[in-house]
Length: 114
Image 1 (tube, rainbow, N blue to C red):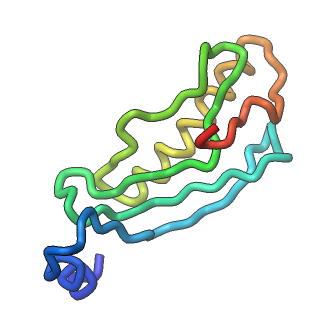
Image 2 (cartoon, helix red, strand yellow; image 1 turned 90 degrees about the horizontal axis):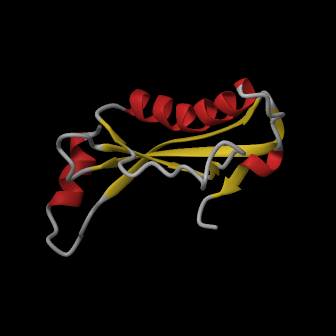
């Protein structure tokens, strides 16, 4: 992360919780091609331990789940790990339901915030 940018954010006490968008990725799951998925990875300048936070455009809600799975702590110590975990958050549930005999369906991908 660029130290000059972080310095600008840290030098003003009026700024709270600065976050920098470091990656914006879109893709489609091979088994559910009709739904575009977006992952954003943010650098949270004040989180020293796990400064990379991911956001998903959709969450998985398969027939094997009572509700959509939303990660409670979407933080990692690197951009790569945050992106990998975001992808696994969806893929693991979809593949798990498929292994149990369910046919993947676009309705399994629920938009975030709904």
